[in-house]
Length: 550
Image (cartoon, rainbow, N blue to C red; front, side, top):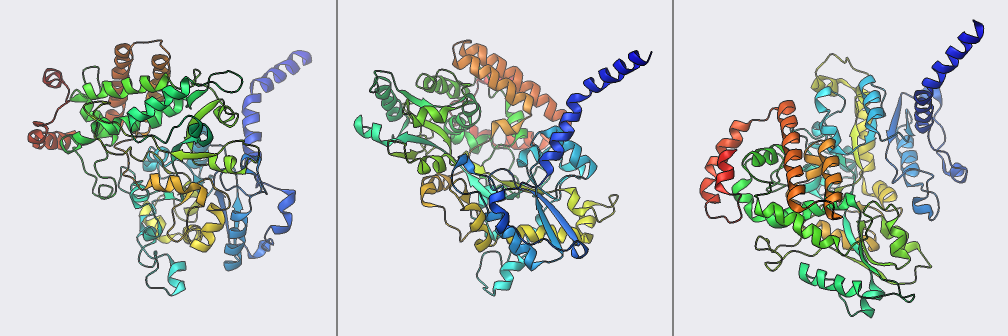
């Protein structure tokens, strides 16, 4: 009997082993990172009896003290130094820098129990799905008031002396992060943008220049495709993975062919975001337009998006699921790679690279590409990189049964948490963190981008995208689109087969969102009817017969 019981206990422990491992790993990740090299620079600990506030901050991987981005250079210490300066200013406060798992299951567990870090780096579109649960603190009441650290400088013209909001360089993206409930939960700390890195030496050898339009882009890639390296091996014109096709490419191409329709189909203007995101289509507008016959096999503009994507695919790496595309670029087996700005750090630091490089942006469609081309530069698809939110842990000193506005007004702890964020935004502090190495672009006025990132700064000056498809609906929608798109681009499905799946996917996502969020579709319909005269002169709308059936 004893043996049987022992076996039973062992079986139970084995069954629970995955859960135990998750707990152990999660606990380890919560420990502040240590680096023996940075011990001397660590701030002096505050005496325990004098600590009134211990603020836990999970800033994300980009600025984590003690780490070596891309394994290059000295360990990061910018955030450590700024924390030390803040703690010196507020001796009753200690800032603990943590790493936490980014998986939603962990965040939900911590947020629902009130045990999450006070400040988290979370994609704000993921935050939006939970704002009604009281897990995150809206920051509007602070952003609309002066930053007290700016006021202290005595400069009446300094950005931030009227409103904290005014300190942010990229206003369209920063203010455009307001949630569907009208409140701002996100501090857009820095910016990221994509670009096409290219082997400048190879371009010179082949007599190529960065393309000015889509036709030049395609012609240049044909020339590269016909070229072989010193070993007689073909050179891949462009490296890109399926995630970029699913996200960036779709948004860019969609904007190029739908942009001139916006005056007739933009049926809702958010009073807060519209001044910054002119003509942006939110999920409810996309759902409404789908019911009017858009985004189907019979929508000529929608077909163009995927036709041009297939055209691009013939010049890219065969395996769209490849992980280490950067290696292919640095070893000169490919002429270009489409990726994000942090790669600049690795390329700039590589003393053995063996070629010159530069960056250009995806060139625009022309009327030769498609009759629906807006003939405008490709829009911005990048935006907020590090996105900081304040969680319900910051108001743990208040009564949870009170309305959020009352808790915000009463919480002394929240005041100190926000003060830390405001301190981070002071240019002299901010620059130590964001410009410690070239990865992301500063979003605070008065802090210049590092020289190697200047091409991305020029890209970010463009108008923002018409919509962000992968963030408009749920994860299921994006995953299905990605799987079906990979099949289509690799020859496993025809365009009509793929679009048939897309219709089902959009319809399912639309039904789910309408059921959960219940938008004011009557208002959208009224605006749709008011814009009928505008659409009457537009070409490339879905067939009238299909629209009538919806």
